[in-house]
Image (cartoon, one colour):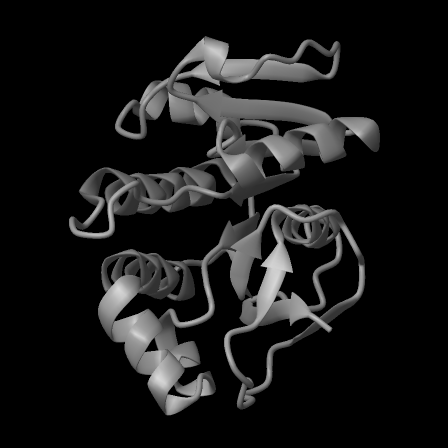
Length: 211
């Protein structure tokens, strides 16, 4: 597949790039700085650009079979307008270029999934510590749901730096989670890559955590 990854220089994004290349995919990595990915591969193309540069975004999206976003704000105190406007721009360009498949990394606690968490955990995570990032993800999710794209929203539990386990629980139904579920970035990257071609969760959001 031809896969475009936005946020390719982040912790999860870099895992995605390496995983996709190891499986023989053609990868278009969109980054703000070329030196943020210290990797060379004949199947890797790096495009350096910002999220408000439509021409460069078009170059990254054109011809892709699927796009992945691991973008997120860097602050717990300030909304990331650059990212939310960037996701909106990516959605519009994908529609224009007729690239339908979009796998978006969100988080448990965004959108209606805040109700999946126990009361005290919901208060700490959604209303205190991650209130701002979750508001950004919720806005991006709303824009995806309004689009014509065949999206899958991936909502993992708390991200860890552990190894890939493939021992996961996931689904799109409403559930009540226990405690504060975790999952490794490696498992999230593998799941997102798999669901570039697996569309069983098309136009839906998936919760995801270690079993």
